[in-house]
Image 1: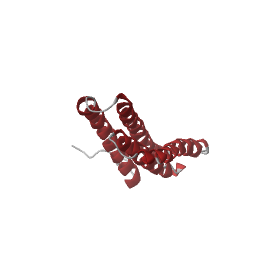
Image 2: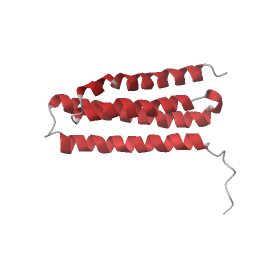
Image 3: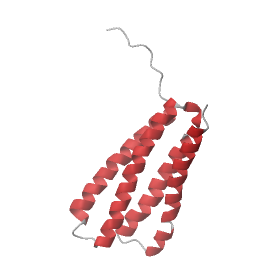
Image 4: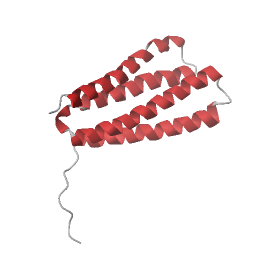
Length: 135
């Protein structure tokens, strides 16, 4: 069978961000299942709600990371890498602190959570700005 025409190769960064996004999405599904089956009988409704918010935002932004990875190939000059890094930082900080709080971490950790939220917001705003500026 003849070789297919040479396809444009994906950049290392877009492949990396796509892989990280896929991994984070899979982990969000696993965390959601763990919360529903193992944690529901053990956590207060308030802590379970906090846990579910972490899962939801992780999944949303993992999907956003997949979209950014695709966008990096579609619009390579757009500078979407910073948005992707902001999503990763936001998932780790926002989601990480919410998971920890739900599982009993000290309440002062909640003061860090908004920094993760700011990273997520900044990632979306920066992506929109980068794409808006394209010719």
